[in-house]
Image (cartoon, rainbow, N blue to C red; front, side):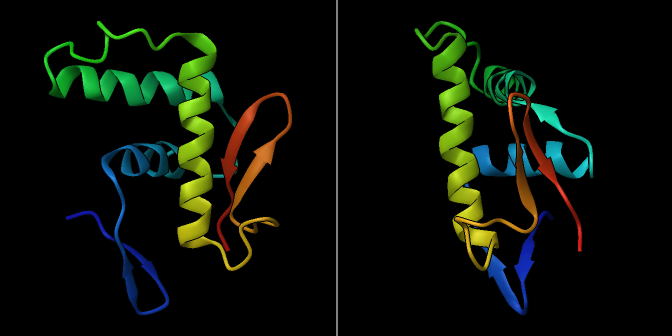
Length: 101
């Protein structure tokens, strides 16, 4: 069972947020490119939903924007101050990195 805790509280995550956090956890302290995160999201959905996503019009920058939106949602859930993140860092011109305490 995958659960995320903030203090003693269980944080509820969407499927997309779970995919992102798992990829970032598996790459602690290593920047993960936005394109790789987008690919991870769409590959997971593609497997689970019989190519539904692959047949949509989401391409390139739109897929990366989906990553950005979901990273911001994750920050709101896990960071004390989402505008100045401590754990979920942006790596300029690359992507995102999870930095443990």
